[in-house]
Each structure stands twice: as C-alpha cells, then as structure tokens.
Length: 197
Image (tube, rainbow, N blue to C red):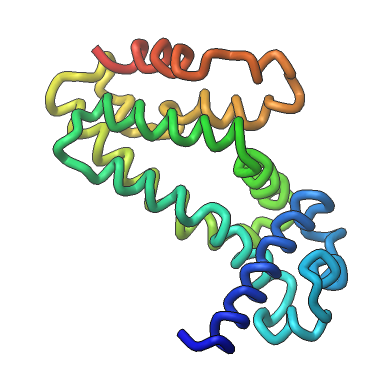
C-alpha cells in the first residue's frame, strides 16, 4: 500500500469513527454529515467521496464497529472441538464484556432504537449478523440436545433465550446503575445452569 492509499484509508477510518460517535450521540435522524465531517476533521465533500449517503455511512460505521466481534463470536460457535456449553458461555462472556465495558453496548442500543424507527435502515445488520449468528447458535444447541445436554431439548429452537441476559445487561446498563456491579460471569453461569444439564 502506497502513502496515498494509506492516507485514504486513514481518512475513511476517521470518518467511520466520527460517524459511529455522532450516531450514538444523536441518533440517525438528528446526526448530520456536517457533524461527522467536523468530528473527523475533513470536509463534508470528503465524506461523500467515500459514502453515497447517510444510510450507507450508518451501515458501514456499524459494520466497522461490530463486524470484528461478530466474526469472533461466529468462530467460537463454529469450533466443533469445544463442548456446546463452553462455547455458549465463552460467547456470552465476550458479548457481555463488550456490551458492559465498551461502546458496543451503546451501538447495540443504537441499533435497537433505529430498528424501531427505521426498520429498513438496520435490515443489513439483521441479515449479516443476527440471522447467521442465530442459525449457528441453533445448530450448536441442537448438537447439545442430541448429546442430552439440555434440560429442555426445545430450548435449541430459541437462541434468544440464551442471549437474553446479555441483551438485558446492555439495555439496562444506563437505566439500572446497579446492573453495572453485577458479577457477569456468575450471572451467566447461573443462567446456563438453567439451560444445560
């Protein structure tokens, strides 16, 4: 990569970083391209050179922020050498730590809020992250059910039951300050004790 390409990549990353912060702070509707450009230290036209419109910028900012975590989680679920409960516990701990200690929790809340207001805006996230991850969790839990490791075999059909405590923690972080002091590993273990034999 030559110097010009490196500079273009650095500008793109600065714009994506500024965009995710602007969207978290103001939401999709209120955030403006001018806000993003000012945060990134670039001209408004520079933003439009890399992104067709605000919706594309939103999608790319979410992908940049959440994509690496989604890939990590997918790899954990796919590892057939790891027992299902261990895989699920690792996934939930990774998600919970990110949701409670990084801005990924803010991004989760942003996605949920924008899904209510603009469902078409977040369709890409459902298609690229939620649906594939849920399918992988279903396959993993079916493997656990086949091995007699679930208290209720039908649990395998509902991956939402597995991740509910993590989502609740992310959503409640600012609403219920005492949630921040919860021992997440202990809570996840207690939850999984109700799912697995």
